[in-house]
Image (cartoon, rainbow, N blue to C red; front, side, top):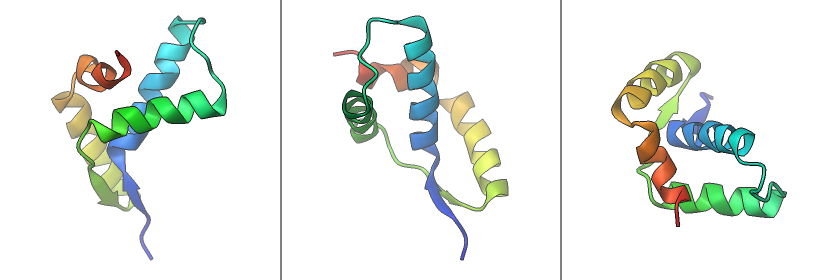
Length: 77
């Protein structure tokens, strides 16, 4: 069975890691990390793909479509 994944979730997790690297004052505990990811994902549209080839293609298109500010905006309260 083909793997099903939300490409936006991967993007959010990568962007959060970038934010953590630049901001040492953010809490990095698993609960806070998951809260931030959940908040972002609830404010962004899901984009599901199956298979590795589809994932790479869609990921490239989505990175072109969404600027970092689009992905960061749910993190900014």
